[in-house]
Image (cartoon, rainbow, N blue to C red; front, side):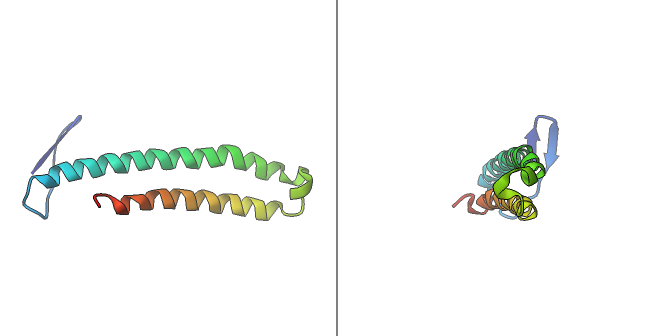
Length: 94
């Protein structure tokens, strides 16, 4: 089967023999690209906000002794956000 894109025609293979799979594949690819863009936004947002905060945390009185813990928690929160957002694709088509 063929998939027409803005760059040309690409071959794709379908397990099922119906044409509804084409529409589903296109919708899934759009949802995947949207999720990738959202994940990039959240990753950059966390890095822009929390890396300077982690660097300056020894100067903040209530974070002074817990600076490494704060940095680790910020990184973990960033990863959890990106993975959770990606897992939403598992519900696609239901």
